[in-house]
Image 1 (cartoon, rainbow, N blue to C red):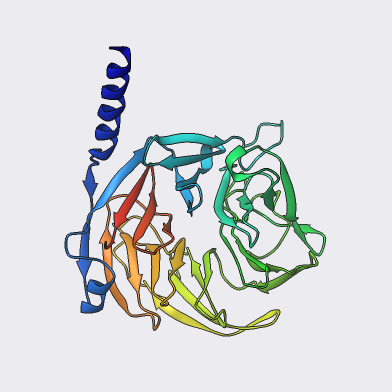
Image 2: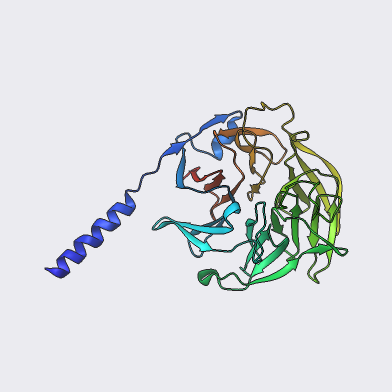
Length: 332
């Protein structure tokens, strides 16, 4: 009888997991027929986790079938799985000091290096760091990858990416400083930069002209780099040619200038798929661009979106959306 009960309970649990339903949110506005090849007509964004203060930096980890993301103000990384939902994965995630401080001190962007290690943009500790622990046994032990440029501390790394050579690129706006702007007395650089960390550890300043550099990623082939600028006065995405340690020919990829100020959000985190399509947080929701910068559509959402992550097969998009996390199963 006990064995029969155990089997029935297990079957019931599996059925419950299989039948999990989520609330849906948002409206997809389609501006070009090309978006129909990316997102099916019946695709809907689902709320898969909520209860955060400001969700950021989503990362899909295929091997563990888990989504990692930062809750920046609470200095925590959460993980989400289909089976268990949200769980605390790592705390502290971005500030390991013992002195209380203001500002958004947690981790922000999360990526994997070419060896599969977790790399974090750490606001509070003001550095790019690698977690010195396996992904399945997370610990708040970190190795610094970059914390200064020419003797001056960087401010608060926001988002990052690697190229195939294993070189690290990251953006450094002031959002993680206690005052979150240029007037913060702890800010040491006169600019908000985009940097490259060479394999020998040398830090190279690539851009010092953007007010709020944010999302960053390579297009396929790694000859062009895209950077989002979360500046309400210049709400643009910029594209650059990559020439070794220099970025050249910078120009606007897409501009949201003149956007309705009632819309929440600004150009922020994004991902680029293997075909060069761009999925980006922006004013009013997630913007979908082709490789030439043509806006194909927007997933309109009521709250500000900060970033997104693609599944390994690039058919599912995970979205950090203020106090919640969304899943958009774009196609089957």
